[in-house]
Amino acid sequence: MTIHDSNKGTQMIVKRSLYRSVFVGSLALSLYGAPAVAQNEASSADTAAARELAIEGLKLADAGHCAQAIDKLFRAEKLRH
Image (cartoon, rainbow, N blue to C red; front, side, top):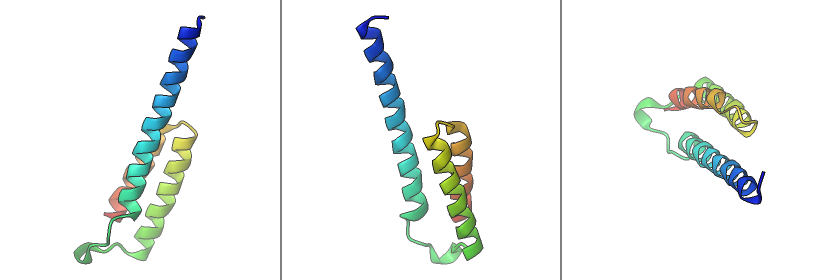
């Protein structure tokens, strides 16, 4: 293994982490940053369920389980919007 190979691996890890952070941050903002729409306001139970799914999704993403995280975060998004 050369220094170049080591740097390449580190760069891939940093890029993957950055992409995951941007994705999770964007999804979190869409869940909690958007104003409520009067015509289709979510019930408090739906909001609580969406929040729980989003938190679980963020924990999964931080642990590197991106496929499972995406599922939870999309389910949270459907409940909220």
